[in-house]
Structure formats: C-alpha cells, structure tokens
Length: 605
Image (cartoon, rainbow, N blue to C red; front, side):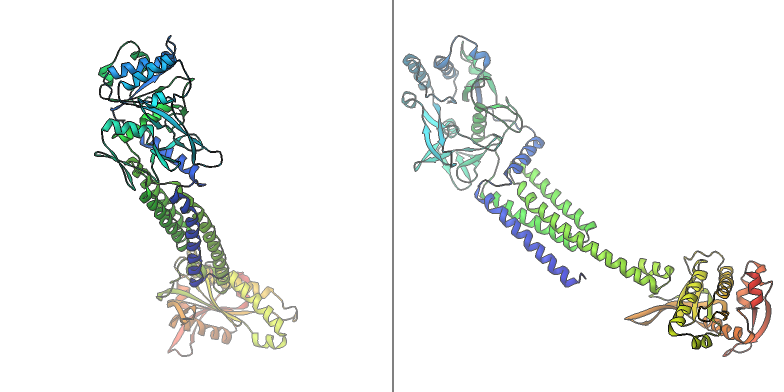
C-alpha cells in the first residue's frame, strides 16, 4: 500500500475518532459513580498516592478511647464496663461522645440502666447500622440500639462504603431508607461538637466555618491520615480508675473496641488491619477541620476532560510523527498527567488516575501498532526504491543521493580524471549478431567496465550503447592515487575484454578503445525537473572524448593526454607507451598524448 498524505490524514482522523469513542465508553460509569472495570486500578493507584504523600497530622480535637486487650483482661465486662468508662469520660470534660458499639443484645436491666445514665451524663451518640440486600446496593433495613439507649442518645449509622479489598473509600453521611434520610454517627458527633447546623449543597457540607467536600449524593471520600494509632488514642484501662481531664477536656471522644477479638477491622493504604473505631474517628476528624479529600461532580468532569484530551493528544502525536518522536512524546504526556494527579492529591484533590490511563494506554498501543505497520511498509518501499536507484546509479552516487537528496543540486567544479571506453568494431559485430547476442555482448562489456572502474575507486556515470563514461578523483572516493588507478583500470578492462569470446562468433577477437584525460570539469545534475541524471561536462570531457578518435586513427587501445601522464606516480606504467603530438578535432594546435598498443597492453597486464 502506498501511504499518501491524504491516506495518512484519513488514518489519523479514524484513529482519533476510535480513541474518542473508547474514552466515551469509559466516562459514563465514572461520572455517575457506578462500579466500573477500572475501579480496582484506581484503588491501587490511590493507595500508591497515599504512600507517596505520606501520613497527615490529624486534628487534635478527636480522641479515641480504645477498649483493647489489656482493658478486657480486667474483671469488669460488658455494659458495666461501658458505663464505667463513659462516666469517667464525662467527668473528664469531654464535649461529646461517639459510642461505636451496637447496643442491640439484651443484658441485665441494672447494667442497661447504668449505661443509659452514663450516656445521659454528656452529649452522646450511639451506633446503628443499615442492612443491605443481597441483590442490590441499596439499604433495606436498619439495626437500631435498644429504645432505652435511644431515649438518652441519638443513634447514627456506622456504615462505610468499601472497595473489593475491604478498604473504606467513602463515609455516607446521610442514608436514604424508606424515603427518610438517616445521619451517620460521625455526622451527629461533628454537629454536636461544633454546635453548628449542618448545611448541605451540591459540593459539600458546611458546619459553621468548616466546609467538607462531598462526592455524589452525601458520600464523603475518606482521607486516611496514617497507620493505626494516627488518631490520638488512649487505652480504656486508664479511665477505669479515675477521669483524665488533661487528655479529654473539650474533646470529641470516640469509644470503641480495638481488642484483637472484637470489632470490625479494615485494610487501609497504611495498615492492613485498622480498627473500625479509628475509621469512624478519622471521618469525625475530617468533619471537624482535619485533612479532607476533595472529589465531587466537577472533579469528575475534569477527569473526563483529562482522559479525553490526553488520549487524543497521544494518538495524534503517534500517528502524525514518526514513532521515534511520537512514542516519547506520548510517554511524556502520560507521565506529566500522572504527575498532575499526584500533585493534586498532595493538595487534597482526588483526581482519577485510572481513567486517563485506561483511555490513553490502549489507544496508544493500537495507534502505535498502526504507525509501526505504516512505517515498516514505508521503509520497505524506501528500501525497494533505493535498490532500484542503485541499479540506475553507481554505488558511490547512490550512497550520496540516498544520504543527501539535494546532492549536486548545486554543481561542483573540481579536477577530475575523465575515462571514456567503447568496443572496437562494435557496429560490424552487431550486424552479425542477433538482437539477443548484441544485448549479451553489451551486458558483458558493461559488467567488465564497472568491475574495472569501481573496484579501483572510480565511478561509472553513464552507459552509452557500446561505450561508457567514468570519472576518478571524486570527493569521498577511495582511490588515493586516482590517475594511477584510472590507468590500471584501463589496462584491466582491455586485458579482460580480449580474453572473452562471443559464442555466436567464436573467431571474433574483442578489443576496446580507452581515452584518459585530467582537468577541471563540472559535476552536476542535467535534465528537466521531473527527470534528471548525474553527468560531467566541460572542455576536459570533450578532450577525453576526442582521444577516442585518436585511438581509432592510431589503431591503439589506450590514449592518454600528456597532462594525465604528468600526474602518474609510477613511471613503469608509461614504459611501453609511445608519445606523439596529434591534432584534435575542433581544437587549435596539437596535443601531446601517450599511446598504448595491443602488445603493450598484454605485456603490462
């Protein structure tokens, strides 16, 4: 296939359309917050951003009172333990209590009464939970604490939205069940702690002068601050004996289990096993002024635009530029886009990293394969063109033209050795040969001429019927003594041609005539703009051509001008030549030449 500019434009346009359609398939689930095939990748990349960003300092307003293994080792258990702890938390001056324990199981009425009295001793909120159906993500029921406890403390939901690995990603602040919105335990605690009314809008929740960004609905992205223990934590055993106002005064206290056999545990980017009470405390910390993670409908729109623009730019550069430039540019764009995502995360903005990667990488791979195929076919076409060029030009000229297409667009003036040769008596021989025999004879002569000239650094410029014109001494050619090389090439051509026989004319002995001259000449392109050939022109060329006539008149094989022979470095080449002055047609005066006859050629060979 020939790749024309119009075909290339069509391929680029088609690939851009396909890349845009692929991106358009990935965007809707992301915009609506539905589960998507790219979610596992995004969760992995999000955790990597957490690790790169490192821990964040949590607000000091939230403290965890942890019922740990040491606390449970004591003699007080169950609700009696909770009542004792809450009583001392109240005496310590805590501003609000969040109890992350589901008080649904029946117990001794005295213990329940003591726990209810303790909860009533300070502003308290207790845990409830939504029950989700097996075939739907919507909540279908609620698990409430016993009415006795609801009379003294408001119940809030402790449900968290986790990914497939069990890592909490969102904290629902309001859950719609039966056409009624139920607040979370974290939201109730934050409202009580700040003493402000909650105001929800499309982008966030405002409590006084604290605004917390929310995602779709009333879901708040969880911003982990570190491994377990990052939220200030006190062992509950320290509160069994007496209050500790120096650590709890004015705080929002979250009471829950961290014991190894009790309570929920979750995987986070910083810790494989984080107690659920610490996740609840982290959410409360976000709502009361701690580090947040901003993701909303506007951020999701930026994600979609990011994915589309990145994909189209990468595809365009790969399809429009050579792969050696397009691939590094696409890689640079993808890397830069990921750095932007990481920088945004450092500043508390959750931009999606998986969406642009999922959109761009497959499109880059497909366009890269297409571009590679195109370049490979174009390279094959170029190789065939170069191979064809080499059949029409000598290897030296073909190399120059291949490396520099503008070669000889400006003519070169230099001193050159001009080498003319033709077959003696060719006209009579051709009359006695069939056309195929004539063609075979010319092919054999041209091959011998090329071998003799080019093996010694010369360059055959043109084949003219039974003759050739060649030059020695071009810049960049290998011959260090071009005059001697030209004369040796003449000896070799004459000797090897005399050894060949024509199958149709076995008695015919082949000879050639060769003219040699050195002088200034113009090396250039000749012809129309649509068709040109490399040639050499000038008076030196004309003189070398006229020497062929001298060879015919003198019945010689090689005729070289005196100027040519003066530049020879090996006098042995001229030992068997004789020197004469001859007139040259079209020129005034005579020219001194050296002549080699057939016998001299044989002895020199």
